[in-house]
Image 1 (cartoon, rainbow, N blue to C red):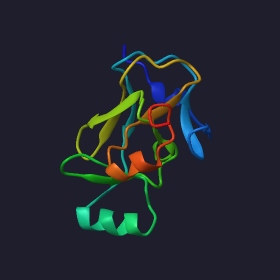
Image 2: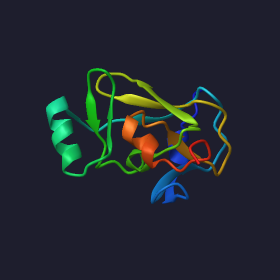
Image 3: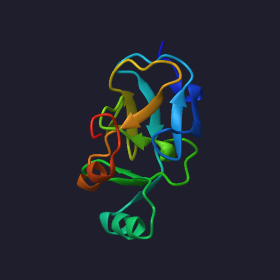
Image 4: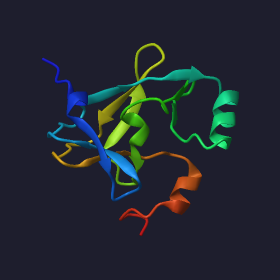
Length: 127
């Protein structure tokens, strides 16, 4: 039986930046944590919204998904020592997957994967 980890994910203050998302339970490597969905937009619209300050946009090679109206995933922070990965999902969605075993109480993070983030990053790897 597949666990539903999304119900164990909470938003709270993050030592990394602002708010973050945390798990209340252990999550095994490879587990699906939640589905990333939102408004599917074009690359042109994505660039426009980023210029207006919206930074909560995920993408795969074909789709841009604006997650600014979501309850949880919009708060995921960057860490070079990330514990989650974003993979393709079903139609117009992506999946947040545990990249490694994640302990209860741990903040969920991803590698944002764009050049500018590494200049601003203060994680243990970059420090």
